[in-house]
Image (cartoon, rainbow over all chains, first blue to last red; front, side, top):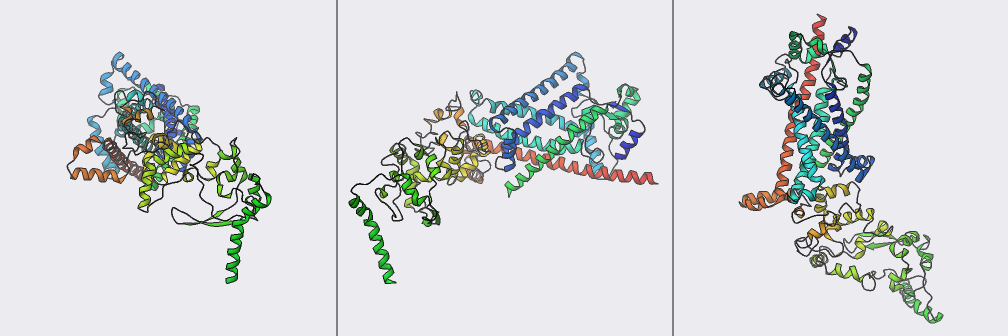
Length: 284
Length: 324
């Protein structure tokens, strides 16, 4: 399918806007804050290993890493705030609440997703064709929901750990210890999930490697859209609105996205391999 | 052979009386300076290595008799304005010139100089406990030297605020209390100090448990006991109260002992014991996350891998289709 890409390039590929500037900005802020949080936080969870010491001192050690961690947490809060402001704007003022909560455009789980999962399993095991997905594939929905859940858990436990004496007015001290455990393992879960599952699903599949630029340039080619989300493509085409999404190519943005994304992918994969090998060493 | 033995004994007797001879012959003893000792102990050709038997383990060690003057001058004793010399501590050499007998008496730190921390150390239950252990021939109580020892502790005093020494303290304690060090490292204090950050704002063992007078944690008078724990925590955490101090400083959720305890309590139908122990809740949340992580990576990992292969297979099929 790399060939498909090349072929499309040759015949003046048609590009459609998949993500608006707002979504791209949110995703970019999320990348910055996530990497900042993970790089300054994960060494604490793997304190017994030399790479963790090295990484922690590389980023400034204690207490600098703590400050970076809190600043990045602030950026995450900003992201979450922007997201909820955006959603409430759509729901309350633009009257698109029904569209967000239900139907093909919704990112929440729908009855169709159950059928999609079954069709996907059939395809993966070789018993059927590639399922026809709509705008949001079910695993993208899972990722979105786990991001929501993860942010809530990390923010809640993070605040408990940030102001332990303040919160001990309400909770006994061991709640802070529970928060630490939840914070640590939710972080390991989130980091490992993003650096393996999310990276593979969006960037490292054989037909996309190394980077899927859609989230950085916002653009997706007609071929890709048709191949990956045929239901959405057909729906837009039938409604006659597909051309409204057409955008000119942006080579600079595409280049920048590659320059930024490839090193981040490598850092993420390296960190995951370090975490996994440390876990194995600890278990042995 | 016999002659040689006699010669040795004679020499030893001679050496034993040598100082007496000197003190008579010279009349008065001049102060022995560090340099006097350094004449031999700073010269590798004059003093070599001797074998020592460790009181503790019975291990035979080879110890160099060379003394690094520079290190001594940088140590607390060397830097002191009182100008301590070697014989101030090695008092059995007072007035001994030239070659002296091997195996000096152990240095007595407490009697004349360090009676202040010394007394509280000797009264603490840590020492008492160790004395009991000694009776069982398990372990001798540690002397001053066992903690305040080595090349590292010679430099850069004061010990209490120096990050390096604070890290060393943790290592000293974990020499015996290994399981507590492991559980300490699962906590935030331990995570940071294990990464090599042992400043005064990261609590080490002695910040909570005390230095010289270490009482058992169950003792209400101990630093982490009922009466004093709020005070101990609020040294760093301003506004620490009775609720705050219920913090679990040594979470055991990664230790098999906790699981054994829980299984035993379940067998005894002692659910109250499980419910009142915060460690159970930490264990619960840990196990929950192990489950979530295990499930997520099994399901999604399998999905990613299968998808990878399926796309390659589809690609091949498509190519074959085009070929026809």
